[in-house]
Image 1 (cartoon, rainbow, N blue to C red):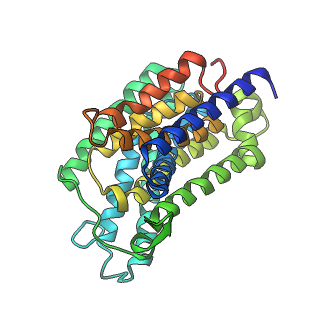
Image 2 (image 1 turned 90 degrees about the horizontal axis):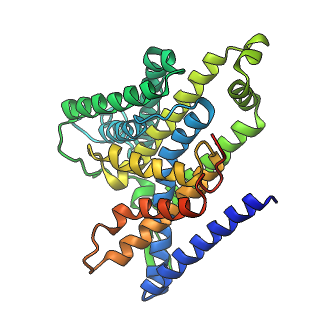
Length: 333
C-alpha cells in the first residue's frame, strides 16, 4: 500500500471513529445509537445514488453535470405520480397491487431519467466537450429549466407519499427499537449498485473501452469502436442512477422542488471529498457524509444549532481538504 493511500485510509478511519464516538455519546441507549447509524447509512446511500452518476460522468468524460440533482428530483416526481391516484401517470386502475405498482413506478422513473439524459448528451452537450465552462453554464441552465417544468407540471406544492406497500410498511426490531425495513432496502440497493458499477467499470469489456477512450480517444476510434456512443451510454447511465435514487427516496422524502438543489450540493461535496473522478472515493465519501449528517441531526436536537445538519457536508469537506487537498482518493487533474 502506497503512503498516499495509507494516509487516506487512516483519515477515513479517524473520521469514522470520531462520528461513531459522537453518535454513541449523544445516544442515551443502544436503540438511539442504532437509529443514528442506520439513518446515516440510509442518507449515505441516497447521496451515493446522486454522487455516483456525477462522479462517473466527471471521471470518465470530464463533464461536471450540474443538472444531476434535477434527475433525482424528476425521478421522485415520476415515481410518486405513478404510485398515487390522480396524477399524469396514474397506474392505480391498471396495477391495483401497490407492490407491483412501485416496481413499475421505479422503472418508469429510470426510463424517464435515461431518456432525458440521452437527449441532453446527444442534443446539447456533445458539441461542448472541448469547452468546460460552456458545459457548466449549459447544465446549470438545464437544471433551471427542469425546475420550472416540474413546477409547471406538478406545481410547487410538496407531495407526501401516502400509498403504502410491503417493504415500506414493514418494521424490524433492533436494540429494543423499531426500524423501518425500507431503510434497509435502500441501503441494500446502494450496496448492490456500488458493487455492480465497480464491476462494470473494472471487469467488463465496456468498462475497459470506456477507460481506454478517456486515455486515448483517437486510438480507440482507430480500432473501430464508436467512442461517442460509449460516452453517451456513460452519461445516460449517470442520469438513470440519479433518477433511480429519486424514485426510491420518494417513499420517505416525498416529492418536492427542493430535492434537486439539496442533493446536488451534498453530492458535489461527496465527489470533491472522495476525490474528483474517483468512484471509490465517491462510495466512501457518501457513507462518511451520510453518517456525519445523521450525527449532526442528533446533536442539533434541542439546541440552537438547527442549521448544523445542512452545513455539515461542507464542514467535513473543508476538514478533509485541509489534510488532503485532492480529496481522499483523488489525484492531480
